Image (tube, rainbow, N blue to C red; front, side):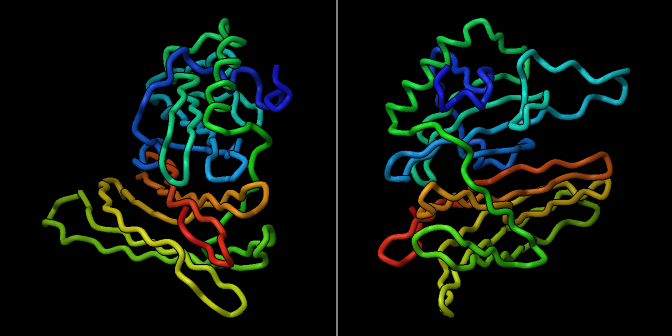
Amino acid sequence: MHSLLASFCLCALLLPSAVRAAQDPLATGQGEHAAQVIGWSDDEKRFAVRLYARAPPASPQLEREPETCEGYVNSEGHPFRGSLTVLAYEGGRLLSSFPIQEAGPCTPLTQAQERLNAALKRLEALGIRMGPPAKELLFTPEIGGLRVEDGPQAPYTLEYAERIVPQPSKPKQSLQRGSLEQELSVLKEGTRTKVLSRRTSYEYSAAAAGYWRPGLDRIFLSPSGRTLVVMGAERVGNLSGGRKALRLLGVLAWSGGQLKPL
């Protein structure tokens, strides 16, 4: 096994013989996710994301949870039910999607080594070198700001703000719609500058105490600290349970003393 991938578990990097073009799962807000940035290009403009999508909970009618597939482990080495995909990006644009493990039926491990070799060749062709997971900075809503101590322009603070604009709903209608405005600013040496702004629409059901809560989830830093991958999250659920879907809000990079979208 390649030395850079030894810590990932062989099953976590198996790629099918053909890379399939797919919709960006980090743009749809669907599913329940966990993610890591696991590789960068030399100029830190391209990167790879390892995305776990957990399967929905089993039906209460089942006597026991379905068994996990052989070799399906998460980033902490624990068995999980769901799918695993490697995504390659340039800035905020999805370049390639590599389905690795399907939610069902189970993806066999017999072709592990040849798929691993194919994965390395394809990612290397994109200029992305696999390595340890990128450093993560978790956002705490109560604080409102995220202090960054790494990188050529550190220290500085990232400040997140959002505005939810609901549409009027009809009487007795549980479906809620509206628009979400999200902004990220950098505060450095007493100067505050807006560096990211996006507006999207939302829709969710308020039935059974349904809810939808957007927000900033975390920042992934490149090895030099020059590039920042900004990951948001949408928490959706009701009395039966909930999930957290990750959203790629943007990718920023320091250039000439300014933090700009990449």
